[in-house]
Length: 292
Image (cartoon, rainbow, N blue to C red):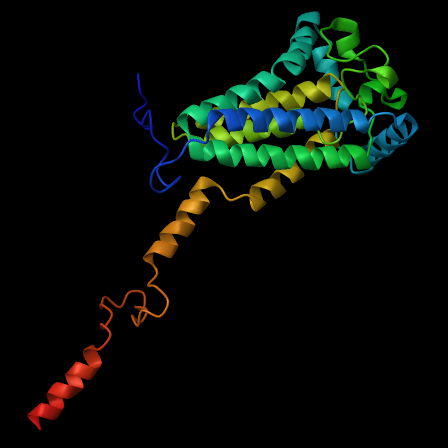
């Protein structure tokens, strides 16, 4: 049953003017796959800075305590009350991240092409900035930091996506904790769906990044600051890449403005009068002269 507040096959009002053109599927598949492979390769290039990653982890831990952020252990202690809860958190961390983002992009591609292009650009920019930060600031996660006194829930309770020896893990770079793309992508998924839909329930999508935040902190895979930095980078990307609604407003303003050099003077707001056509003043003076 179609929602009363959202047409089933159209972009939300104000999202675009005219027909939204869906990009070629093959090009998009190659583009997204290429971006993913570049990112994975870049994360492996950023690997190997073990000593620096642990020094940075101590700095982040001390900074969080200096600014009085709550300890990550407060969240983890809630999970450790029951094995089922911690197992679900580990599963959410391991399973939901990529499939949710892929499903988000596929749905936008099929149903909201304009929002798909916008979201894909945002995610690419966010991921590229994250990769640059991984190279510049390698960071060990709190589960590997002895001073944090946190449990590596993935290794003890399972499931886990990481190898037993972080320094020799060929599947993932375990020293790329900042920023948290788990949280950054989840937040973009929620914001993208809120922007692309008009149902009154769309704000519930914010539960996805909220749960993700609790999961990444509770499983000790990320510091609070990892999520804060991801949020800041996403905010910059959103400011740089115009949304479909902003592009539509820009086109509407450009379409309503008189062309440059048309001779039509601007009408003061609220005047209620129409602009005087070019040449009308001269014709009026000609009539007056004839009467004389």
